[in-house]
Length: 223
Image (cartoon, rainbow, N blue to C red; front, side, top):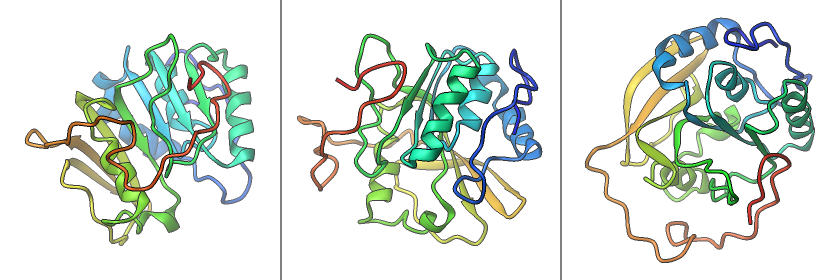
């Protein structure tokens, strides 16, 4: 797998063998980034279920100011950190080994990482059907639409397998859709009429408790 454009064009990325992660092909990435050209430079990126960082590193190569990578699998996370080091992107990257179901998505520290201008959300294919009311994945998708995590002009790119049945929270609307290579890629924006409850604690919008999260490996501390 390689970076296809920008200052790091043609630099190769370490990737997991087998089916643990599913990096976007060059063709699909080209289609996505052709639609996102104006939304990359100097923007804050979140790459959630990042694998070894294909989309986030592509954004950094194209001029994004920072990228937060969230990945729980230990092997993928180790390769993600190695990629950030090899590309010289440690300062701009936050490699966070965390459970998406329990993650706040808001790193703390001196650097401002959020709200994000662009979020890539790429759950494992077998998990995508769980984007349904009452499921932790649905709550994670909802939480990412909140103004403290997404800028007013921000987008989330959601990839799911074709024919997958799921339900988006009402806070999102679909702005564009690509059906390609057995997958569906939706460009989501926060609805202009979305209303969010005022939070008095970090976890009020999530019914279950939100235990402490593992510390990010590079770029910042969650505390």
